[in-house]
Image 1 (cartoon, rainbow, N blue to C red):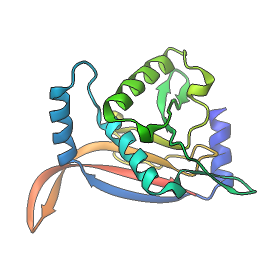
Image 2: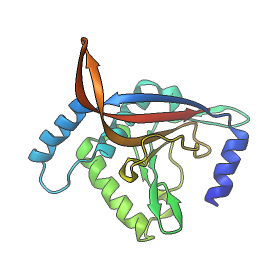
Image 3: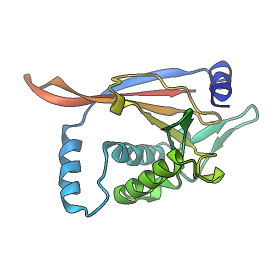
Length: 186
């Protein structure tokens, strides 16, 4: 089913790719400070990415859309599908209404969804639908990749690993941390 849907996506939706290197030094510092204050659930870089995507979709609502032959469908709710590896494939549980949630709630929900996805315990409404997807392969050492759009969505954010890289700021070179993000869109 996954292969069929993704093949359909590549055949029927023209993909164009945009890649950016993100300096995440400030993000890493904020994450460390928040995690020192938070009891229990620790906020991940991926949780920040989900929250940032939700904010971006609030600011550019035209990107929170699906394409059909009849019309472009704009969604009011920002429902972010997040790719999770499971035995024999991939599933995309959804953080529903992500635009209305803070980092701690996103983190808690994502951890719960990922655990239940790997156990095969998700309900269909927890992985069917979604208005935007995120696929993060950084934890596997993948620095950059181009994900395939999950139809009928119009885009997916592909996130690579965090790397130590030289950062030039005001003519001074220093070691910083970057990650590459690629956004295939239709």
